[in-house]
Amino acid sequence: MTGAEALAKATAALSTRGIDGAARDARRLLAYVLDIDAGRVTLVLPDALSTAQVDRFETLVERRGRREPVSHLIGSRQFYGRGFEVGADVLDPRPETEELVAAALTVGFGRVLDLGTGSGCILTTLLAERGADAFGVGTDLSAAALAVAGRNANTHGVADRAQFIQGDWFGALSTGQADFDLIVSNPPYISADEMLGLAPEVRDFEPRIALTDEADGLTAYRIIARDGQEFLRGGGWLMVEIGASQGPAVKDLFSRGGFVSVSVRADLDGRDRVVMGQKPRIST
Image 1 (cartoon, rainbow, N blue to C red):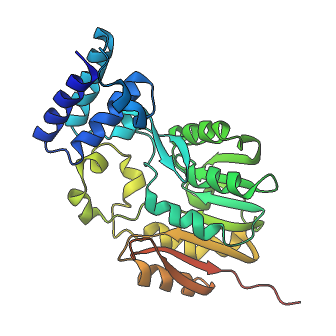
Image 2: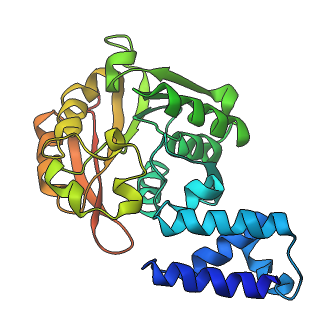
């Protein structure tokens, strides 16, 4: 079987299973099996595949047909120009989350705290972009997620400037440890009622604890806004990713938590995506 024949067969199979972007997904999976960049697939389509390659490709296509995400099948996902290890233990990095990184890079910071770090994509990206003078801490309740985060930090050369601690939000840190210039988080913000409406790729394959608080979607924001100032230096910033309808509610939580200069930042599609606020500077 040639690459062209295998690709056509896979595309038809995925289309029959109702997969959006069937041709794109089939091409990405074939590139993975052949260990080449997806942009080079066209060049090798006339070539014959080995029996092992065909078997592996067909297995991956069948799994994709059962709605397993392509990122899980190939074990990686692009985020802010870098490839990150992903899988069933962590939330897949989304393009929308890049808006949180972009917002964070507009302020100065030497020490950054990433709450619910997951794959570590936010913390690793911030450290890599900021440079050698930046140090970060990532906390997560999941030991499995922290292991992934540690490997990603190592892959991108920031492991010596990153510390990963197991714990629930601020629970892993010492009380009164107000030495961060920046706190960031992409917490679970999907309400329990919204879970059934998610695509199967998300609902059935990503860690539920990273998606929903099993309540109204605002639980984590209440904790972060309430306790955030305790861990920030004067003038430090708190920034969180939000769901598109949560801007007013989270902005109000920040204001009631004593943050100033509170604002909502939209993503490239014009949807509310980041709420940010500053801890007041200490007067002298």
